[in-house]
Amino acid sequence: MSKRIVVTGWLPEPALDILRQAGEVEVHQGQLAPEQVRDAVRGAHAVVSMVHIKVDQELLAAAGPQLEVVANVGVGYDNIDVAAAAARGVTVTNTPGVLVDATADLTIGLMLMVTRRLGEGERLLRARRPWSFHLGFMLGTGLQHKTLGIVGMGRIGRAVCRRARAFGMKVVYNSRRPLPEQLEAELGVYHLPLDELLSSSDVVSLHCPLTEQTHHLIDQRALELMKPSAFLVNTSRGAVVDEKALVKVLQERRIAGAALDVFEREPQVEPELLEMDNVVVVPHLGSATTETRTSMAELAARNVAAVLSGDEPLTPVRA
Ligand code: 8YV
Image (cartoon, rainbow, N blue to C red; front, top):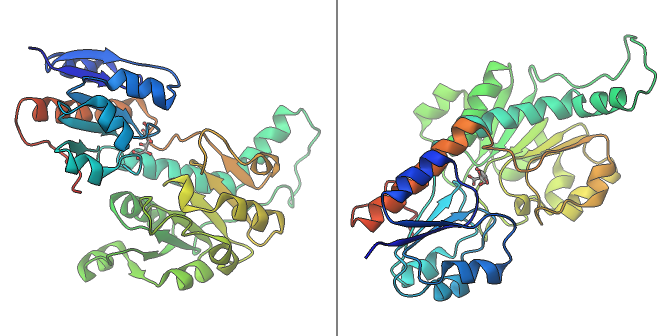
């Protein structure tokens, strides 16, 4: 009997081709309510989950005991109750590696947008407001010789670090596990306690996963440690930042600006953020290139194919 593979969102064709060789594929697109997802996965042997789909006890129970694998299309897997899956013998996989460059590129793009006021400038022209060049017009902040503080020095953090060093920035970092000395030397970085990183950086960029420990890691207290001239960039997960506290410190001008790719209650965005000229907001585009999304989807599909045929998955998530 052919195995049933349920896909919970749009997937590029090359990935679907891989899945079709592994079983019977059913794609559910559009904004699915949790009960619609539960209905969709009933009887599935494999679920390809998108990062906004909550894979919890209820969903796993709805799927049934034949479920073998949940393949997340994303490196982050905070949407999945990994322990609950493990308890049911369900393999969980993610897509590390393939999205490192795309996410690091976007981070630098956001950093430039917010420090050089690019969104603000574009809005000015699109509003057809009068302007004229003068030496003091729309001055931003240069990155050269400034300090970038990277929170979370995994593969994406390191890729951002390399790019920032090429821009002439100094880089400090904070990570659960500090890097080996040799790698620190190669990257030209050193580890700092989080508070020190926050108080000494000109740009703080977040690259840690969302876990119980990192939920609201950047809260009111943390934000108030930042310099009034500093910028916050978040391409990790929205809930790493207390978004309401961020609104408050921005309104009080306690930091200079923020550039956000992710939000605490996606797809909602705190409305005040949309009103502020020193805030850049984009809709979760970290890995959104055709090449990267295709690679992510193919990796997820290969993980499904491996597990359904009794092989080891390529990129398992350990409980
Ligand atoms: C996007 C991500 O969420 O991989 C992650 O964890 O956040 C991003 O890559 C993903 O591409 C959305 O499907």
